Every structure is written in structure tokens, then in C-alpha cells.
Length: 163
Image 1 (cartoon, helix red, strand yellow):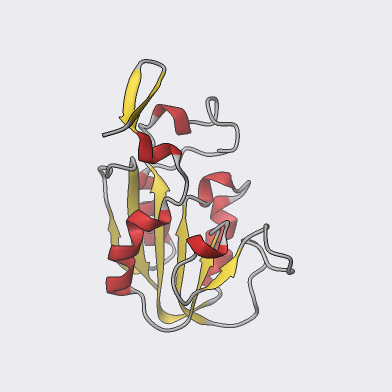
Image 2 (cartoon, rainbow, N blue to C red):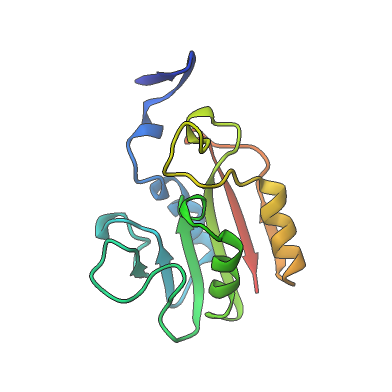
């Protein structure tokens, strides 16, 4: 297995390659159906299959705080919230675009990965804790909330909730 080292800690090299969403796709495909958005996909080839791509890199008017004015069945987002100035405001906005029964599927960097902390990776503005995402979903009246406490080989966690 190829590895990388950061501040004396060894990680699987796959964590440095980008396209984190690929590790979440098998799970997402089990729960996401219908029409949806992939927010923060960065590249067409990295987008959730069949989703409308939302990212600053695309030449259109949409971004995480300005979604198309329509309701969808799901929102998929991988490694995006930690880059946004107002992650709560973003999730509040995303909720307005979900049909009742719609699903938000988040794949996020786990807070104990040293390199992804904002003081080491300046692209990351926030450290998102699984318990805070769970608390957000509960406070906003989502149901069927599932948030993993641990992390996978990409040092990431899942947060899935139904509106």
C-alpha cells in the first residue's frame, strides 16, 4: 500500500489524490434515487452519477448558496462543507430545495485527520464534528438521521438524513 506522511503520522496515499466522493458512491447508490444535486463535485467526472452538478468551477450562476429554484429528491455532497464560510447557512438553503422525504447525503473529512485541520490545510475553514452534524439535522427536524462516528480509509465520515 502506498502511504504518505504528515507531521510524523502515516496515512494511505489515497487521501491525497482527490475524488473523495468515489468512496461514498457505493453507499449513496443504496439510498439516493430520483433527481438530485451534487454540490461541490469539482469536476464532471467526479460528480454523483445522474446528479445536476453544482460547483464554482462550472460556468453557470449556481453555487452552494444559490441552487436552482426547484425541489429535488436528494442532495449529495462530498468534502464541500468544510470549505464554506457558513456551513449552517448552506445546509439551511439546501433543505429548501428538498422535497418532503428528500435525503441529504454528506461525506465529510473526519476531525481527527491532522492534515485537514484549517491551520494545516488553509482551504478548510471548518472542522466538522459528527455530533455537530447530527445535532444540526435533529434541530432542523430531519428524520432517519445516520451519522458515523468513526472514519473510513479516506479518514472521512458519513451523515445522511431525510427531510
